[in-house]
Length: 281
Image 1 (tube, one colour):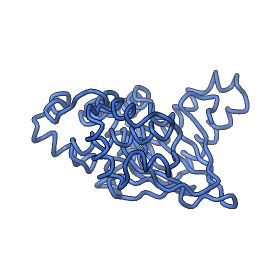
Image 2 (tube, helix red, strand yellow):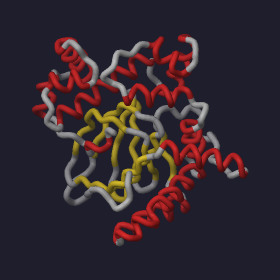
Image 3 (cartoon, one colour):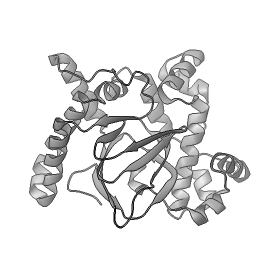
């Protein structure tokens, strides 16, 4: 459900939902009650009211609510991370000497990371959600409270990781943003490397360091995850395949089955979408 602040949504689940393909756009997801799971390239991240998930770059994942039930419902908040505001905040904190969370404890953080709910994050999130009771307050104070929450994230345990992603010099993040916005266009490693201003070899190594995946593996995962979500919301298999850049329906079906173990039509018949469609921007 939308709140009165742009980019902030609340959601709930009252039944278990197996992990299924999803795309996390740059965001923070905080679980108030219950627990949620996201799987990135085989690595599982389970988070609840003690730890929130920070995903500063678009990532193809599998996500679900395996522990939700009527007696143990899940309640959560989805906060989209605005590129401009996050970059401006990170630069301003550098300029004034603001304390930004270090990479201690997460030296190999890749793609997404979990961070402790500290007092600053909890207070900022509560102040933001309280605006929902007054449309006028949300209209006047929404962006200010959102900025306050972003600041708490940048100062918290995920701060170093988020700052690296939103740094003006992060060519990998720019490349990922370009790919996720143009999935229906042909793409090659050379194209991605050129967009990042790197040689093919350097780009391939740095990209894998950041995402745990090779560039081509990442693009394929993004396309298949996006297509799976489109199919689950009613788009036909052929339409979804074309919408994410496949020109051959048979190739799409082969790669889909290889990744998820079922054909697109079989998967569509048994899966339910675990994420809000708005998660894919």
